[in-house]
Amino acid sequence: MIVLLTLFALDFLRTIQQDTHSMHWHQTYNPLVTTPKDSIVDLLHRNGTEQENTAWRCVNPDYIGDNARTSVALLKVHKTGSSTIGSILYRFGIRRGLSFIMPKKVSSYEYWPKTIDKCYQEFYPPCQQGRFDILNIHSRYNGRDILTKYMREDTYVIAPLRHPMDQMISGLYFYGFVNRLKMISKTIEDFLEHPNILTDEDPAVMWFMWNSMSYDIGLDDFDIPKGVKKSYLISKPKYIKEIDRFLNWTEENIDFFLIREKFDESLILLKDRLGWRMEDLVYFSLNTAAEPPKRNRRDTNRLRIKTEEFSYIDYLLYERMKLKLDRMIEEKGAELEVEVSKLRSLNKEFSEYCLEKVEVDPNLLGAVNVLSNKLKNEHKHDRCCFETAIDEKPYYNFIKAYMRNSCKLS
Ligand SMILES: *[C@@H]1O[C@H](CO)[C@@H](O)[C@H](O)[C@H]1NC(C)=O
Ligand SMILES: *[C@@H]1O[C@H](CO)[C@@H](O)[C@H](O)[C@H]1NC(C)=O
Image (tube, rainbow, N blue to C red; front, side):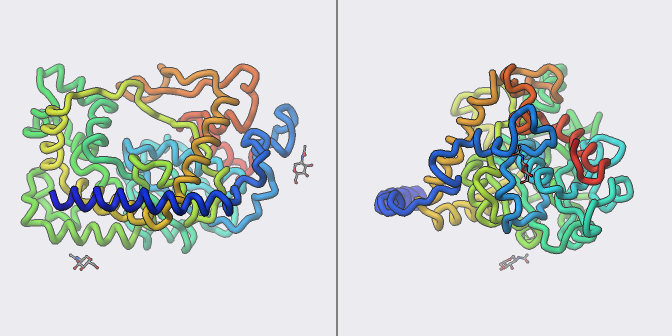
């Protein structure tokens, strides 16, 4: 109750503060996108027309030589919106001729749950400096010391997180586990109480389900005593210190956590830290499930309690990092809101220009329908639209071709 009241009061104070701030802002705000007249469409296409622009560079070269940080590792945390962030990184990287960590043979998905040191020899060599600039493949993280053997010392490590219940439910549907449960007349609740109904047959189910965000970013047996993990029933108070040690480790080894529920806010704050421009962030959502399953409030509460008991390390991780983000949001104040709405209007303007519709794509991965962006006929050959709209799998193929070609397109 006290917490609620405090939050309420803070919210109220913030509203007042924002009002005074935004008045001041209105007069001094200097839009990041060069002049107010520049539309994102013009900006991205300034260098050449659609027909001429065969070099796969759809962005105004004026700002490519800026002071942006160019070495970024995205930890691909399952079902958190990492494909959309990956697309932003992909476009940022190829426009600047950066080196990506990219496997020669197998698809990027097949590495998970391996860590990059376990598969290094299978990557295309970096193009310059002997180090990679960008990591954007499905591998598990095992710390900065190992990462910087392959990537630059100043690599900025980022990881997206999502509310653990939604993340888990999304995975249960996406990987087809709900269908498997249905076949044996069981529910998600049954699974949370007796995970062995799925894991007896396939122990790997646990990698996707049990504290899976923590697992993707480095939780391993070094934190949880061996044997205990296998039982999936760790008593929280007993291991709270190990978990705290793990959370401290993630804070030391990961520079920035994006929170799915505050996606645009996270992107803006990330942009500030990387010295990127607003145009670098333009995105269309990728790999989004068509119909998120709905539940009533009581069922949702029951499920929340059960998922919290089941994946409490993810809950502790999420709560800690969300609090951290909320503090950054508060620090930036009204300026952040202005930039968030700017980003949304850029996204809207560019998607109205490029996209015919967003539809279910039968070729995409997953046991649920996944939405895909369909380009307007007249912009089918527009590089900027194409790059922004394509799904994860085809853009991996483009990165692969680009790395094979020593960081050159065309
Ligand atoms: C695109 O930019 C490059 C580099 O600034 C320049 O040499 C080229 O002429 C531009 N192309 C067009 C069509 O404006
Ligand atoms: C985690 O970090 C905090 C703050 O630095 C520290 O007080 C705490 O003892 C650390 N926990 C463990 C288990 O090392």
